[in-house]
Image 1 (cartoon, rainbow, N blue to C red):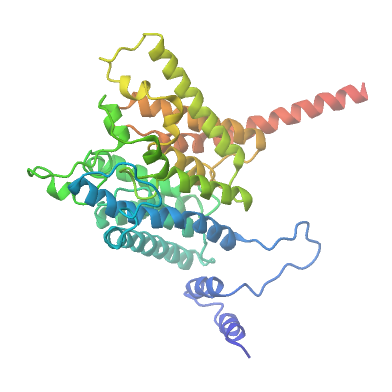
Image 2: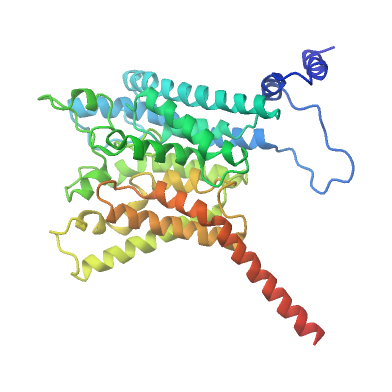
Length: 401
């Protein structure tokens, strides 16, 4: 008798125990479930929630590894001066010093995110007497990638508790929440500890501790510079490759693009939402460029820096690409109908750039735009479905007339 069968028998003998959900979570994580569907099933597939979550995590791993190198590089480059012409083949970037610094800064963020979040999941599973849900596997990886490198661990722990309990468990757990849990966590951090989430010194390791000293490190992002109408020293390729300050996993548009293609190929992420988000962002960017070109906004305006940014550059800076690929496509909180996905994604892109330009105190809008559209997603689907019903009723009346 194998280990898997012994564990299954142990599970059956203790099925009335309170702690069984915790054991079952470990059991199903290590092995495939013994239960199979019998009878007249309509759909037969090899995927399940655990496989889906693991697929998304695989798409996030390159962003995580790159974020570790970039965290170390931004720290050393801020001290020693930036190297122009950086590329994926530059030895100055892929050094052990950069990776080591980034690894030891980001690993605690991952541990706290998973430790606190899964701990709460286990507690709720034991209290409610149901299986531990795998939904937090992706959230636990997303959270360290969308926060600043030096965010205090206790702040992250408090935010995770809030996001999991208030953002998901009170609604019934995985599949029942109306807001993206990872973005709920980030929103809590932003409103509760704004100086740690939107200051110009939070995006490069060591900047906060050394701020106010003669050799303080500047950690301002491109969006922060543009919001202050300052010139930026980063090239288009810097923005595309990701050699810029920012949240841990959001800087490399190249890797985010590859991750998005992987999610589309595996049919996990919706290409309709990704594409319509890009279209919405480009439309809003074109409108702002038209306003600037028409002379309605002058260089003295506080909105000029971001409003005059070339419309397609908005796709390469800030967290827009990361949000459109990994956050907006959340199958639980996004629109479910195909037409609804186009509407939902378009408004995410449109509103993201609008908030980015008109909110110079926090020049990033994708988080707020996605959360807003999470709330409206059921309404969008409702009207799409009602529209389809009305059209079918008209066709039915026409045939019976």
